[in-house]
Image 1 (cartoon, helix red, strand yellow):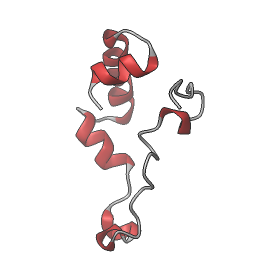
Image 2: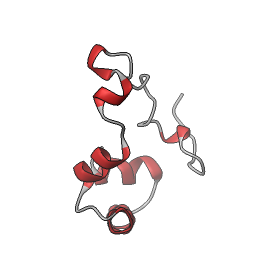
Image 3: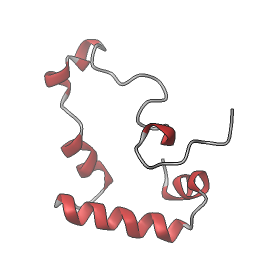
Length: 76
């Protein structure tokens, strides 16, 4: 998701999203979102995702209600 979309979904300022992401990137020792995702997600060969077996379920990690401490979405 874009920073703007994240901010709207969480009801916070886009600048807050940018600041928090910057802090996460610094702590992970990465320079951006793609590098952070590559570092945090297991590779396709480790999970068997090449055949679809390791693919995350729909609505999984992108659903803010699935993260500890996050607010569930009001839609639904």
